[in-house]
Length: 146
Image: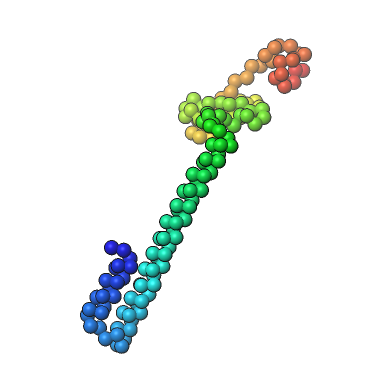
């Protein structure tokens, strides 16, 4: 039973009890049923508007998905999650939760950090000497070799 049907039923009950609508109680019951009737029609209007709006949003979402597929093409999900394409970042996988974290060189040189996903302590070990062992390093590691 819809809201409007319930209000119509209540209005029928008020009319069926032969209540004197000129009495104080009758006036109150008539005013209450009138307000309920208006509210019921407002609810129906809002439900209709919501349904129409929901359909339009679904259509917009479908159109946007189509445009994204046409513009970007099919993307590999693994590439979407990689943050390391932006500059000098290093990809680290947390052994506890498997989350992939991108860190910069400064974070790597600190030697440790907490996984932002699970809080596990991650430790990074760096060699004491440059990988080439030469003061005139040309390996591209960007460390001072003094």
